[in-house]
Length: 412
Image 1 (cartoon, one colour):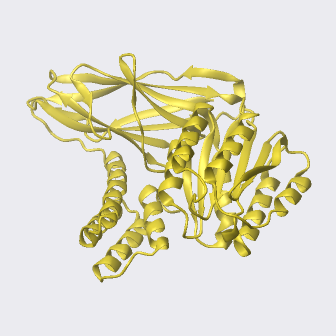
Image 2 (spheres, helix red, strand yellow):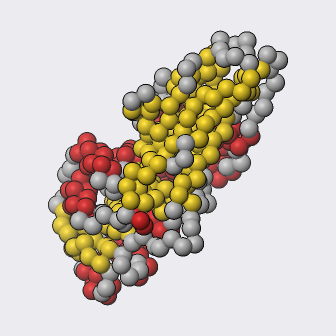
């Protein structure tokens, strides 16, 4: 299996008379499936909240969703299950799937009680995943319905970062309306996974299924974008790199030798991961000019190979004395996706500061941005929240969480 890597500037043409030109470089990255590739086993850990607030239908539907997930696992796949309230325990040790009935029986024994300590569950889940991460797709589903009242949120983030060091991916599922969206989003972002919202118990099976389908499509792991910028080309100083598909995430960038490196994590087969790089290009001679070189470093678990490198590609710009823009509409759409996310973030900050009018204005702006990119689902959610604030109403916890989710992704 190899890497698909393509690049495009929002405008390939550069005005030769300008001392500095800003451009957005969009990178499309995915694993390229091969019909002869063998399937890589999954190494899945379910980290499930069974605190007292999960009593009744919430916990019953989560157990049902987990049971259906067990049935989807194939021969050679591995599973572990951790349950937590204000403590955590391993109820299914990391094992190859050969007796799904006994695993489901252990899951069905869960009863709701106690408080919530997410970090304790994360710690045990990472330990279980770590027992079999070699040559596998190793991911965790962390589900909770509450605040981390008996735990330490900073420890959660440290554990999420530790997981990526071991090539493990963490996905967060918020159940109901009372979970801490900042904590779960940061865990998913730092852990290289995705954030899902289960608003009603009956949605648990669907959301578990979506996440499972996503991890089944992973082909390559532990991937990094490596790039170098040519003379007179530099990164923007503030938030220079962000992923915009399949979810929007601000990505940290690190220096590596003469270039830069950005962790991408797992790459899915034929499903694009799109990254935007914000650069400034200084004055260059007329004609075709190379402005960057790109490469992906990755592991291929199907072949038990690590630190493989894709073929390097060059990014070129066309420097013109008589400048005429050549706008790439697809890249412009990616720019709008990032703008929608950041505008919604500003609205949330304003709301926290008590500036309801400012929050409403920014949500309305984000709604218009969503419409521009054809994301009508997000536009409806964002405009509804804006109107509610303008009319003097409050945003419920459900409103806030829906707003966060639609800012990060396009609803399917």
